[in-house]
Image 1: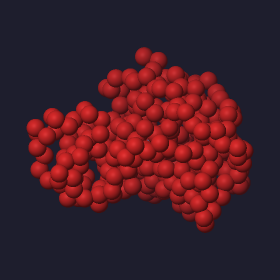
Image 2 (image 1 turned 120 degrees about the vertical axis):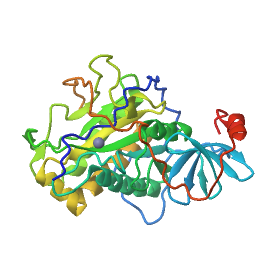
Image 3 (image 1 turned 90 degrees about the vertical axis):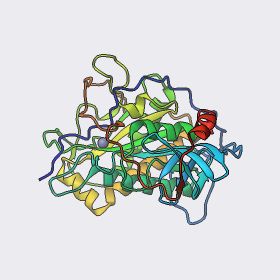
Image 4 (image 1 turned 30 degrees about the vertical axis):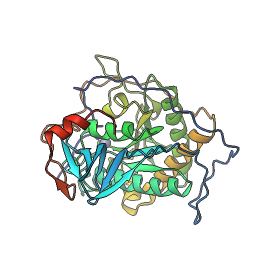
Length: 343
Ligand SMILES: [Zn+2]
C-alpha cells in the first residue's frame, strides 16, 4: 500500500525570494459573459498578445517544454529540465502566452496517492489538459509546464512561465490522503495567492468562486479544511509565501488545491473524470473573468497556520533530464556566449 500523507505542495525553501511584478496590461473587452462553453469554432475572447518573433520556449519532439536561451546553426540552445544546457534541433518553438498551467508533481514524484493507486500527478495533468482545451477554444494562448509524466524541478517550472512572459501562472494540485479533514456541504478548494500581488489575489478569489459554481453539479459530502477559500500560506519563520510556485515567479501566480484525495466521494468523481472536467471549467472561467473583468473574486480567508516544511519535492537533487529528442553535443563556449541574453 502506497500512501503519501500530503500533497507536499512543491516547496523549494532553498531558493531566494523574487518580488512578483504587477500583471501585464490587458486590453479591455466589451464582453461581460462569464458563461463559457467549448465552442466548435474558436471565438476569440482573449486579449491580443504582442508577438515579437522571439522564440521563448521549445516543445521538443518528445513533448518536453524547455526554455530557449538562443538560436544556433544546429537548432536552439535550451535550458534542460534539470537546469543544464543543450542544443535541440527538433521541435516547435513558442512565443508569448496568456497563461501557463502547471500540473503539479510528475515522474518519480507522484504527489499524493490513494491506497488504490490514484496518483495526484496524473489527476493534475488531466485537469490541466482539459483546461488548456477550453482556454484555447476561447482564443487564449496556453502552455503547460509538462505534457507527460516527467519530474520537473520548481525552478524550471517557474522559468518556463517567466520566459513566456505569461500574464498568469496556475499550479494545479490535489490535497493529500489525510482522512481526518472535516466534512462539508461546500467544496474545500484552497487557492493560495502571492501576498504581494493584488492580481494573483484577485485570480485566487475568482478561481474559488468558479470552483464552487462548477462543483455545484455534484451532490456529495466534500472535505473542507480551515484554509478552504482564497488565502495565502506563509512560511512559519520568514513569513514569505511558503510554496515555491507562488514565491518564485515574476508572473502573477497561484497554487490551487482543487479537491481531496482523502475523500472517497471526491476520488470517485476523479476516477470517472467528472471532477477534472468541472475543475477545468472552473479554471477556464476564472481565467476569462480575470482577463476581461474587474471582478474582485470572493471567498477570502485568513491563513490558519504557517508551514516549515511540506516534506520536500521539487528540488534539483537527483534530477534526471528527460529525453529531449534530437540533441547535439553542448558547446561550452557557445553556451557562455548565449546564456543570459534571455532568448
Ligand atoms: Zn500537490
